[in-house]
Image (cartoon, rainbow, N blue to C red):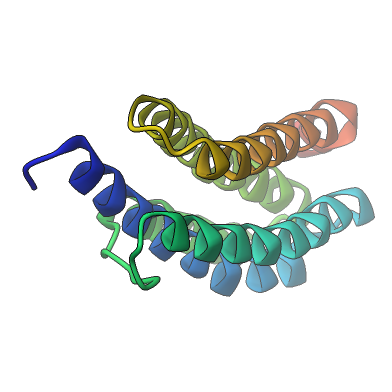
Length: 161
C-alpha cells in the first residue's frame, strides 16, 4: 500500500469480510436468544447487514475495484469468542446477556472501521462513498443503542437473579 486510497480499499475489503461473517453468525445468535426483544433487534440487524453489504458493493464501484475481501482476524476473533461464550452458558437469561455483550463488541469494531472509512473517503474526495458509509455507520450505532436498551430494560436484571 502506497496511498491513502490503497489503505481505504484494504480497510474496505476488511469490513466487507466482516459484514459477511456477521451475516453468517447472526442467525445462530437469533436462534439462541431467549427474549423476543433481543431476537427482534438481531433480526432487524440481520436485514440491515444485508443492505450494508449491498452498499459496500457500491463503494467498491466508486474506487473502481471489484468487491473482494481481506480476512479480518479481529472480527473472526470476536465471533469465535461469541460462539465460545454461547456454548458455555447454560442459563438462558445469562446467555442473552452474553449475546448482547458479544454483539456490542462486534458493533463497536464496525463503528470504528466505518468512522475511519468515512474520514478517509472525505479526504480522498469520495463523497458518494462517504454518504453510503455514513448511512451504515448510523445503523451500526443504532444497533448498539438498541442492544444497550434491551440489556438495561430486562436482560441484565434477569441474568443477575
